[in-house]
Length: 316
Image (cartoon, rainbow, N blue to C red):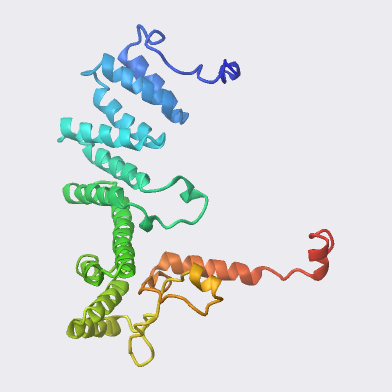
């Protein structure tokens, strides 16, 4: 217990300054490349930092700084990667590979907005803090503006589309929350912000619905009718619209579980749910495709016989 995991030999590949005494700059760089090729990010980071401290103006110094940004990103040290990228951009604004620093910085900021369990179970990242997503959007936007011919531009553009969709959806979540608190003007303003600033995103139909609902609750019938006219003209298949184009102000597009009061009274007494809009199943391709895959999987699954249930699958 007191020796920890040292008996297993872990940590023996760590590099210390004594072990690298007498190393030339080339020796350092070759050792670093070996670590990077083996995906040994911890050793690579240690040697990159030693290389920079011992040869700050050497032949490989600037390249080592770029590789340090990447190694920190791959090892999950996103804050350190962002800090190293900012430092490189500040010190070498005219470097031919400064676009790479912007790109990896953006990737680190995107990874910051993802939780640990995102890779194992479906989660909705738009319901979490979007501060880092907003930072990533700014970083990648600057990359596209300053380096339109960069080899990283195509991937950055695709990531920007996804980030833009996330930012727009987060505004709709905020509007739904304001509805639940009775802050109808704040909700309507969130919907208007989506419509004005996030055109061509799947959240625009919900933004229009939020505006229509919010303005109606505020007694601003003309503004509500205008939002509904735009919604019906551009998104006639919106779930809250009937075949004639009339808007159902009582329809809730977010499923809510029964309240405690409703459960106690067996549904006889329950409070009215506040307006809530989420039409991603209709307009967001990724959500729609995921639902179709799930439906097809359910259809392919054959019903189990009574013998299978009784014998826990041993006899079927």
